[in-house]
Image (cartoon, rainbow, N blue to C red; front, side, top):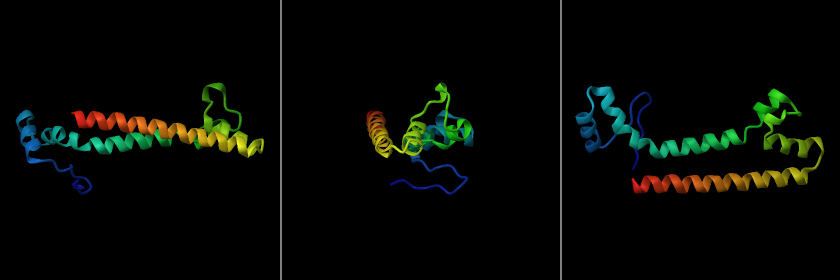
Length: 123
């Protein structure tokens, strides 16, 4: 069971990891880094996944920067969904693109979780 650390403190690690870190490192601060990093694997897995999904679905940044007519270099699917749904009033096409985007993100999420969990279990 994972224990949460108080804000501003380092996460707890097992005695074996802590003793190995003391042998391999000199000083108190460097000794905690190698001992705590393996414990952060699951947290990093979730953070990378959420950051990817959040960035991929970001609509406000390109819309505020470019408006309705984004240049070819800034062509993102969220602008196409907005244009299809609200500028041309074609809600069917906009919802179809949204469902395809959802299926793509679910596929990428599944593959990412499979790859990272296999790597963690084999290590």
